[in-house]
Amino acid sequence: MKYAAKINIMPKKELLDPQGKTVANNMKNVDIHGVLDVRIGKHISIELEADNESEAKQKVETACKKLLANMIMESYEYSVSPS
Image (tube, rainbow, N blue to C red; front, side, top):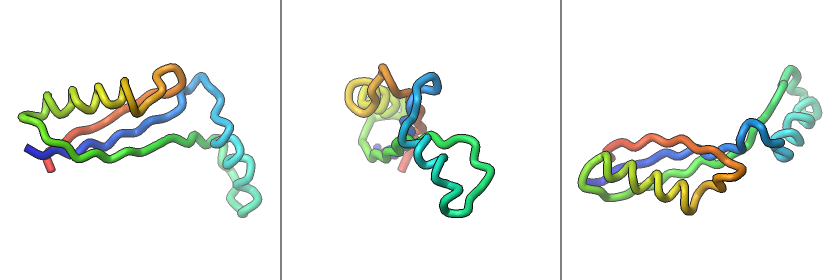
């Protein structure tokens, strides 16, 4: 069966996000005011095959931990649904 996974990877809250800070500081330069904080991360879409949703989630979990996210600096969340 085919599944689609949507993964969001973000810098951990306790760590500085220099890219996000730069974007937040420059919002006023494009006439956008009132922005208090910006955090920039990654969004990853994966299509995969698995026998069931549990197996698909396990594959995504393994991919996140071993390949997609830097577990020291990033956190992740994901959803898996039939496609």
